[in-house]
Image 1 (cartoon, rainbow, N blue to C red):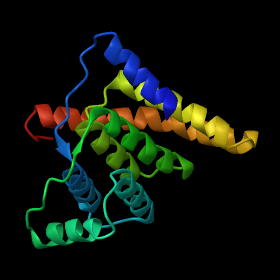
Image 2: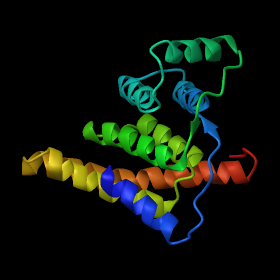
Image 3: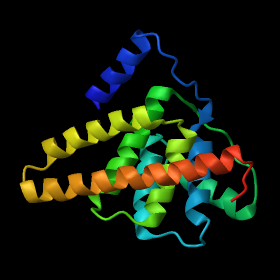
Length: 179
C-alpha cells in the first residue's frame, strides 16, 4: 500500500493531472451491488468482494443492508462520504487482492472489477501501478513459490480480462449505453 501511495504522490508532484472524483461511498457500494445483481444471482465470490468493498469504504454494519433494501425497493439512498482519488485506488487494490486470492476469477468478479475501475477512473497506467503493487504484496505474503506463482499467473490473466471488460464498459458509456 505504501508503494502505491508513493507512486500516486510522485505523479501529483510531477504536476500531472489526476482525476477528481466526487463519488460517495454509499453510491459506490450501491452501484457495485447493482452490477452484481444484474444477472439475478449473488455468487459466493461476489459476496466476498462486496464484504471487502464495504470494509474498504468504512461502511457501518447497518449500511450494506440499508443499501440492499433500497435497491430491492427501488428507493433512493444517500450518497455517503466522498471518496478521494487516493482512497479510490486503495479501495480498488484491496478488492482486486481479494479477487485474485481466489486463484480463478469468475466472469462476475471481472464485471465487478471492471465496474470499480470505471467509476474510479483507473486508466491503464494506474492499473499497471496497482498490478505491480499486488505483485509485491503477493510475493511478501506467500513464501511458498507454488502458491505465489499460481496467484501471479491469475493476476497476469486477470489484468487482460479486466482491461477488456473495462474497455467494453467504457465503450458503452461513450456510446450512450448501446451494446
